[in-house]
Image (cartoon, rainbow, N blue to C red):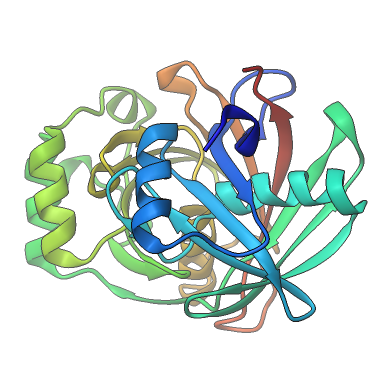
Amino acid sequence: MTNQDIHRIAAFADGSKGGNPAGVMITDTLPSAPEMQEIAAKVGYSETVFAAPFEDGWRVRYFSPEVEVAFCGHATVALGAVLAEREGAGRFPLQLNDGPITVEASGQGDELRSTVTSPPTHSAAADPALVQEALTLFGLTTDDLDPALPAGLAHAGNDHLILLLRSREVLAQMTYDLDAGAALMTRYGLATINLLWAETPRLFHSRNAFAIGGVLEDPATGAAAAALSGYLRDLNWPHDGMIDIIQGQDMGARSLLRAEIVATFGEGIRVSGRTRVIAT
């Protein structure tokens, strides 16, 4: 691997700043899984996406520095930007380990915007034992939770625990032990734990713990945004077809995500944002 083989793209950027960095590697054929894992560890971002031509689209796999991930929204948005630069703006079919999705890209340069349509969504009430363990992990109590949205287990390619907090101040103070978080997520099969505060029913502030991937916190998480959106749809939350998410602000990497929520239960969520190239 050379530095030129890896594109470094920040997805869900706030103009020329912020966003979540992802590595993007496009090859004629995918490397072996151990090779991809090694490359992702060397790149060091929360995820690196690998893509190779497949039928009428692209075969895609995602790796964090620690493990393979079934689906990663911000890396897919980053991939859309790289494919648009290669192929021109358009819609690109992607084949993941668990099924097909798409990514679309429009604009160019600093105005490039990508939209990923997530895998199908589903959700359920969270196991009370899991909720209690998660609250203990973050040093929270049930009094810190906003009863407007029950704690939930939401799926959009991966499982995410959704915890809505009563106040922005409590969200800003998020802290936890990385090893303990990774153990909890492994035990319950979680990709992330998504702590949120609702400024309005359509504007959320998010902090997303990704300890299972060896990352304390993600500045922008498209998969978690899709899972949250599916959960809101399942509970008939007043989203009016769209929500915006501000993420990464408390870690100095303000990121902006928009999720479009169609009425059909279970249908994939369209998550979009701007991208920017990271200088190397």
